[in-house]
Image (cartoon, rainbow, N blue to C red; front, top):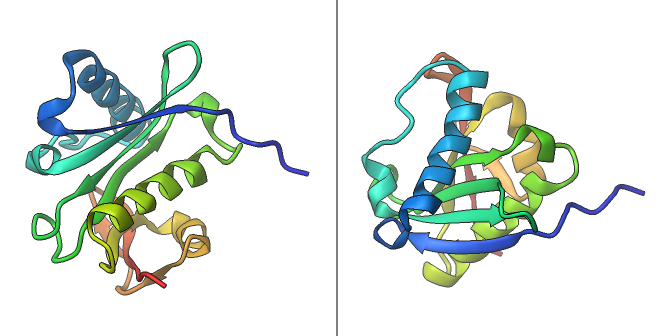
Length: 155
């Protein structure tokens, strides 16, 4: 039986409501994964300012996971989930799934009945498919990494 992911304290905030420490934590974690592990690209972008940000802290106060939910009409006609990231030490125990469930729950609360679009790294297509996302594009390169657009439709 798989171990349950550690319990995190989830915090949602709009960009303007993030305090400087939370913003620093999120950008530092995103930098560790998206820039140092995966290669250089412009991580903070204008979509950050038009998004909900989900931060998952452990009992010690360390950020272990985060994502953003971008408002409809910014990147896509639908709301979109992106910048999904877990700390290296937190991977493999279900943390990514717990993070995405929280993200989809927020989308259902804020935009009931709306589909949600993601630009997923292609190697994670099966993971996102297990959450109900369906591929809606061919594989394409984004920042030198193969990606695929996927859409989640409400039941």
